[in-house]
Length: 339
Image (cartoon, rainbow, N blue to C red; front, side):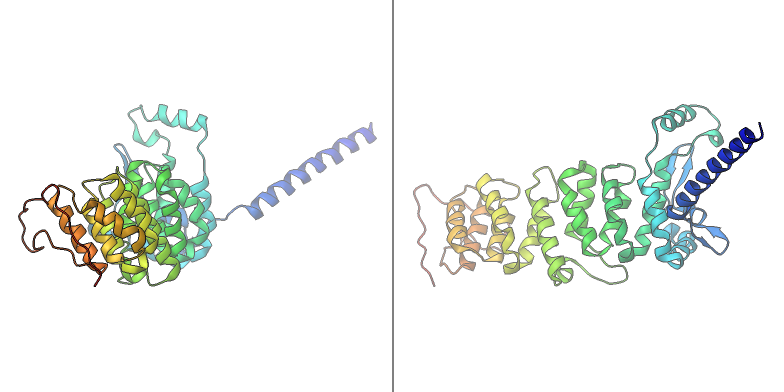
């Protein structure tokens, strides 16, 4: 009997020991929540997103700048110690049981009894990572995964655009894989990445002086230019033209637009080819092909682009004249002589 009790006692202690070991390992390898000035990180970032009876409230803009300054300072002071905890917040997946209970609780009238929307926690985490900027590079995969989440995507785009070139790379790579609203947000950042590096007054042209950033920018602009559903594609084409000969990789995309005779984007693509002034063996024949288009604006753009390549081409009408002139008459040909 004593032996049996001893075995039970030993067995119980062994079970408790194994449970304690498992708990200890889990505790050691799980991200711990940082504390700053007596408040946890969760408490500090709570103002970034609040759950109300009407939905999620995400205060932003100049009117909330002073209100959120203490939160920004706290996150900046906590620094990289916050990253593992914030990544865990982003990677959290709501269980079906919790979602069902949350949806059920949302239908009852007492707001305080409603379960928290997990997107509130994700938005807080994303906005905190945006404050850390380039230091938050380890969070890029988790941030990119939020681009398909309609409630979080706007914040994720903003955060990724400020995390060095790798963050922009993630935006460009995911451009064709996300819903249209997220694509629109990404397109806006690619065309005018003013938030690329916090604290510096940069635009796409100065950012592109860095080789890695330049390659990413050209690829991103090409993806937007190819997207016929995107209203910003003309602006993307114009940006490509601004890079001049450095944007040689964009020539195939611009030639596709010429081949498709896309009336909205065609003049801009022609002008961009004239500004890039590369690959004359394939570009010049394509420009000659569109020179006899019926649209006077397209004729003018093609003539000016060919002149940029060194051909003496009659300009259909002066570029400073705002009104259209008659198109080239049927059967008329233009002589091209190299200068």
